Length: 102
Image 1 (cartoon, rainbow, N blue to C red):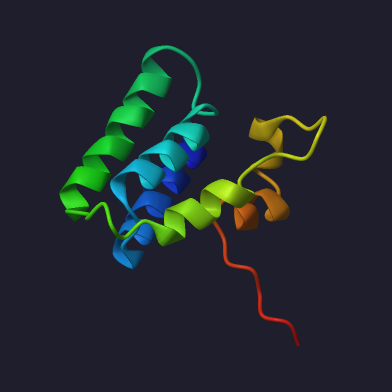
Image 2 (cartoon, rainbow, N blue to C red; image 1 turned 45 degrees about the vertical axis):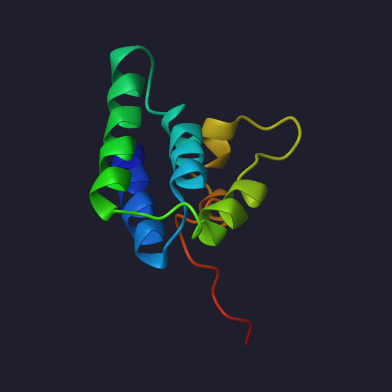
């Protein structure tokens, strides 16, 4: 349930940045793979789609989601659903901000 909340926050946050529908949907779906199976996963994907639709995004503005898609990949040999709960995973997938260098 916490992951679903994080997915929804991510979607809303990236929507505010103007990411495109296709990239944001793909990113949300990637994160929803950890929301369970069957109806739980389907509900997560539907909610991501609803949030994106409600945000009124334009296809031309997808840079933030596209950037997150390129970094939101677990390291070789790691479980994506375990990795996404780490600080590195959250930062790589846009669920947390990387603190600025001192």
